[in-house]
Length: 122
Image (cartoon, rainbow, N blue to C red; front, side, top):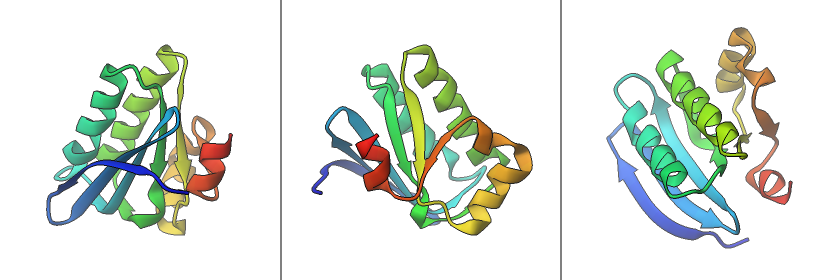
């Protein structure tokens, strides 16, 4: 399935690709999502929400690490998307990142999919 690439940002330890697929904005962070890099993901998430796109899909398959700051970026986007009648869908989480969501209970507030394609089909 082809996705229209909208943009890419890179801060060394994290690269974020942003695209559109139908009515969804798709974000693909690759690397480490932490205090130093979280802005690279929060800015395009906020921009999509500001543009009225409330269905966000985050491809987590390239995330090697996510700390509490990264988790808060995703939780904040989820609250905004929910308020706009949308949602944040997480896809393809690696076990180490999924564990952070399990420990904090955040996995209960997100819709988690095995793959981006599955997230886009819902």
